[in-house]
Amino acid sequence: MRSVPNIIPFVDLTAQHQPIAAQIEQAIQTVLRRGDYVLGQALTEFEQAFAAACGVQHGVGVACGTDAIALGLQACGVGSGDEVILPANTFVATLIGVLRSGATPVFVDCDPKTALIDLVAAEKAITPKTRAIVPVHLYGQMVSPTQLLDLANTYDLLIFEDAAQAHMAEREGYRAGSIGVAAAFSFYPSKNLGAMGDGGMVVTKDESVAQMLRSLRNYGAPRKYFHTDYGTNSRLDTIQAAVLNVKLPYLGEWNRDRRRIADKYNTLLRPLHSQGILPIHNQSGAGHVYHLYIVRALKSGCVVDREALQEQLNSQGIQTGIHYPLPCHLQPAFANLGYRSGDFPIAEALCQEIFSLPMYPGLTDSQITQVVGTIESVLAHQDSRKISA
Image (tube, rainbow, N blue to C red; front, top):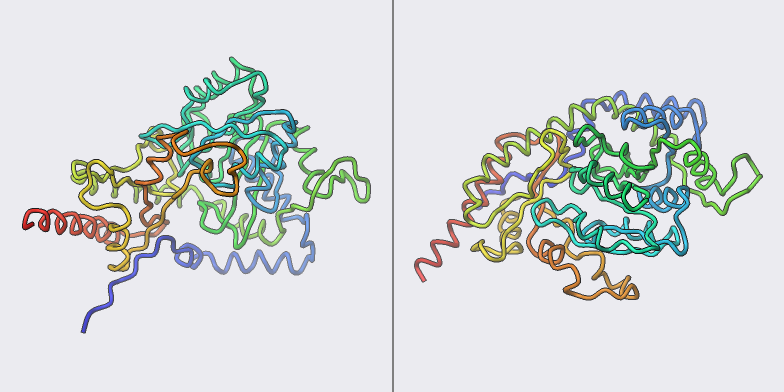
């Protein structure tokens, strides 16, 4: 009888929640007793705690990360007639947030080693209509704060960070969320700091931006039944905030575990670089929080293509992902923006090569060894087939 392989999930939230289950249940029960389900005490407490953790003064909880981008840009005064620069290789929520603000998105390509936005390309894309840049701190690694600030100061641009994958990431003495005027975070369950459902937040050092956000998320009403802005209903639920309040003190420990896992992967994968398996480069040292661990199966140097490698891993119970298989400018829904295949060759090439290995706090050394050992076996098997042929 064929043995069933041990499953290594791509993400395991149960393992993370189990040790703190009693605390989470108690926090939820507290909200139930109070009955303040919308804009309640736990939300206020979490907004203050998370903003402080990011190194800024204000946090405004919203329904999701997409709303955090859309409403955050709107609160910063970005809208119709403005151009906003963003990378082509990001989750579509970044683009949707820019479009919902009323601004015109302007894509640029990325760095082939880090997959982060190419700031040289961004500078070339600046026009008199450029109002803001949205750097995406991708996979848990920040875009260079000093380079961003130099660019913004030179061209009088607003920096609005997309930090949805970079909770407590650091680089060059800055923490994600503290570089620009404001930043968007997502608390989707699989994030480094995840809720038990959807959730998001905008953090900002600007009190006027925070005040506008509190109005925009609540029907444009700074006080009940008095509507001064064209807002919407986008509020982080009090129960979700209570859960996040419990989890926030553990975030540092969880991020350190992610770095341990990444270091183990880096060590074990090093001999495979010559065989075309190449991790995305870390330029941030211990400041990288590894929301995802991304590797490339190089088209020009790997004996197995990405899809075949993923299939073999899956057959051995090892789950993987692709973040992301199609860049934003080639998504069918946004063909009206006028971009074509070939416009951003680096982003397009990366989308054909990258895949994500299991990454979550609690992943063991033996599991990591199993993942990399399986990749080695697949490569060796393919090499032997080539030789015998």
